[in-house]
Amino acid sequence: MAKVKPRVKVPKSASAGDVITIKTLISHPMESGQRKDKKTGELIPRKIINKFVAAFEGTPVFTANIEPAVSANPYFEFSMKVPGPGTIRFEWTDDDGTVYDLEKSIAVA
Image (cartoon, rainbow, N blue to C red):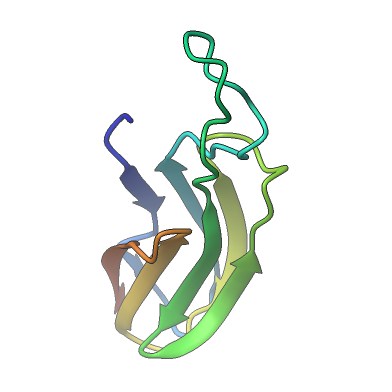
């Protein structure tokens, strides 16, 4: 499997009360468990990102439960009102319990 790599685009600064757009993408094959291996004919085990959470200073601002029908490399874009300076933590949870995470800070101008 290719290396799983999360990427996030967040403005470095904003004014308190501004609404910002956040974009996330994680490189992940999102194997549904319904395809067969071409060489062996056996089912390829399911391995998907099944949950995504973005939290500002510990308070969730966006969550998603993901199902097998989502394509590889899931992309999410959402808006958030900036309450003040702080850190946004992004977490993607895989079927096997692996958590991929990334943090981005926002300064208040």
